[in-house]
Image 1: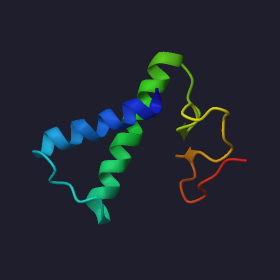
Image 2: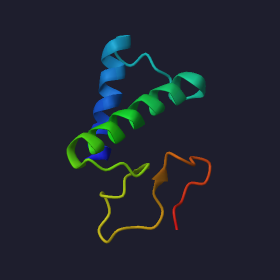
Image 3: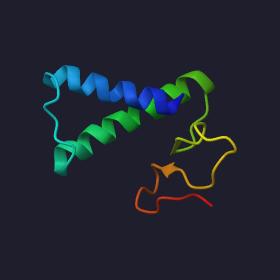
Length: 79
């Protein structure tokens, strides 16, 4: 759920700025990713009522131990 909502967030950002105008690098790319992350986590909270600061955990089967952790983005993996 959070991954799909994250990608929809990218679509919303692109539609608001007029197409493919966001460069995936530098500050504009970071803002785009941040907004998409917020969409993903907000959707997950809205549906499940739980908030765990992670994205992509539901994509892999079997579950992986390395997922995006929004609380500590520099870490990269949750063990």
